[in-house]
Amino acid sequence: MDFDSSNLSLDCLIYIFAFLDEDDLIRASEVCKFWHEAAVTPWLWRQMCLQQWTFCNVARSESGKGSWRSYFLRRARLERRMETGRSGADYTCRSLRGHTGSVVGLVYLAGSDADISSSASVVCSASTDGTVRAWDVQQGTQLWATPAQSALCDITVDTKLGTLFTSDTAGKISAWEGLSGREVASFSTSSSGCKLLAYSVENQSVLMAGTGGGALHTLTSPSLTQLSRHMLFDTFKINQLISSPDRKWLFVGAQECIDTSPKVFFSESLSCPSEDEPPLRQSLPVSDCCAAAFLPADPARLVLIHNTENRGYSTLSVFNISMKKSKYQVDILVQQVETFQLEFGGRRPDVLLQTQGSDTLVVAVGNRLRVYTLKGVVLASFEDHTQPIAALCVDSFRVVTASRDLSLRVLTWKKEKDKGRTLQSRFHLLGGSHTMSRGFTKMACDYVSIVASVQSVNGKDVLKAYSFNS
Image 1 (cartoon, rainbow, N blue to C red):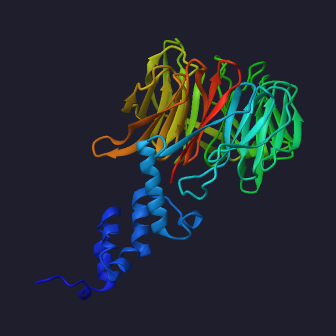
Image 2: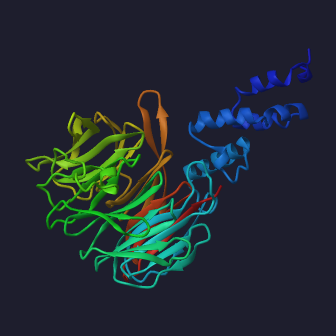
Image 3: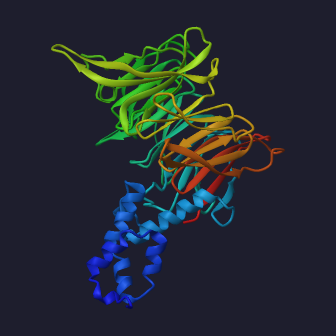
């Protein structure tokens, strides 16, 4: 007997189509008008989106225009191109030239997240030539450049305000309007080489600045009015400033000061200081800290890589941070919950640490990349690069490494029944000629692009911008 689809109700057909994948659903939509009506039902595509990515919001996607089907098709197409990495077909590469010095930092002023809410990516670079430059990544054009000043040391961004912040060798901190590059405020620390961190919590935006003399400044954003100043590491440079994902905790460290413990602060006690009480802080029970990171899905959990007393090997330790309230005071409680020895020995200041989810750690040292659980189980190991990894970016979809061998390696997360989450190496991106450069040094990523700085032999660093086609 011939099958007659008209005997099925629309709801029944939608239920059957819920078991189809993307390709079968598209083919079903081409059978007849009745099947097409069922196959484009928003509920089906919403379910597919949430099963594939768990967190997505079509309302934020300008390209999707409210359509779950459009969102799914565009994001799936983009991720396939990020997995295969065919030059020309999947991505375009542009060289961004203009700096006459070394690039010291890269930040995204505007970028696309996993919800693909924007197709335009704007990255800003700071250089020892004393300028900040803004670039349209997709077009490969410079949008603006600031007037030259003293050589810059660091750059950060408050994306909520659209404001950039830089520090220079003269100890000056500047705030720049993101749309125009106009300087809107400045603050003098009288100490060169400041490390910067900008963030917003609810209605308050602040800038943290760690100086070369060991002082920590808390400034309003973007006006750069000082809220507090605390001396933490006498004569040693603060070069580790990391905020927890919920902005509740601030980690501060000085890598040069190997015998002093790093600190963790309750952020609100710095941004809203009390005249009668010192800020809430606690020293961590480790010294000689090489790297630190909070876990994105567990913001009160801090991961540190540090060296032990005999300096013979490196250790990774995980700490829970909480508030301990008593009748008369409030303290920060730091509790070690995990620790294990890493595979490399000796002091490695070049170690890179990133985290993902609530239990995944990504560590790069030399040309090696390792993925660990919190218990120290190695989930994946790679030695694709021939020279040291200089920069590392991690998000919920992929891991990107930039190396001195002038290549970028793109790896994507996958789930296996036995191992759980692990990484799969996909492809590499080349950065140019070794005769003209000394490899990649800095890197930044959003969901649709990668921008990395190439250290040029002539001292004029070039940016390489890779934009994936969606």
